[in-house]
Length: 409
Image 1 (tube, rainbow, N blue to C red):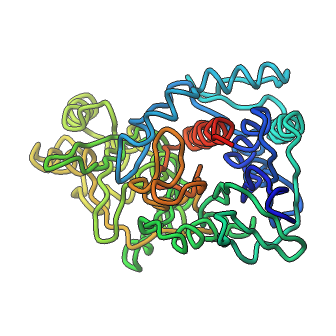
Image 2 (cartoon, helix red, strand yellow; image 1 turned 180 degrees about the horizontal axis):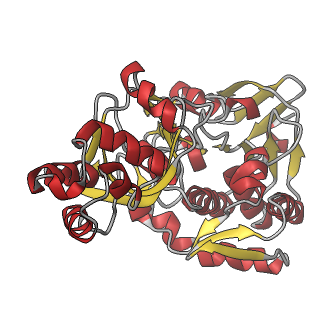
């Protein structure tokens, strides 16, 4: 392919962010091609939300994202909002519903979102090249990007890194975007699994195994570093005991903030005064045992475990208030020590990635490498559970697509 025939852009990755960038650029007049090693586009979309795709959250905003630069996501999120994506969904006549306030899902199948993005790409005359394993990405002497796969070689004035992170390797996740970014001199914030179940050491697993399958609503407290002081966030949602540790929405949320060696603080009675609850139960039913008292507040198996560990035998009416107050302290702030996580195999997203310090927040283009863009999960912007990561894919992809369409010839 001669330089005169070079494409305007090659998008590496046919996922959410990649197809959004391709469709936006293509409809803006760019000649665009999408490359992906998978045989079908949007594989991660297809399995998301139990197969119904939690495609956005209406309240999505910068405060629902983790990044070394917490301000980076503001521009893209403001210029392509959840309402904008919902309008696209409605235009394609995809039925949807809110599972919880603001958290939107397809009524039928996640495949409708993939189909919508494919049609949007077709409308922009985007060439979709699937089953192409990317071998090399380089820049020639004329500043044109050369992308070599096991089946073809493409030349383009720009490339977009949109292959995602390292989560869910069974779907083919690789570190390609990070590797290419490094080759062009961009820095990488150390990647790690996020929105992932947490695991514990042998001593904790010994008692957790007996609770496997038990679920409950909790408040998981996370510390967010912001300057010298930081702040605490509490995720109030479900927790599930597993044979290896803890899972459930509240734990997945907390996992994005958890760091090796840190503890995890759990409120077993969120929104309630644990000490008051226990004293009132003691007064109302003084003859019942400790396990029965706790079972009125907690799942039965957990109630029996905590009673055996922290309460004396006999009726609660005979227990000193000090003993109940000590147990209340545990229930309000149960400090556990995870040893790790279930890793990328079970992680919904990857934390870290391409350092935003090297990117324009408005265009997603590398500051020192004109024509190199990065979007979606490949970038150091990680959303909370509940559709925020998809919104980042749409917003960042749209920002890059718009920038491509507006680039001078």
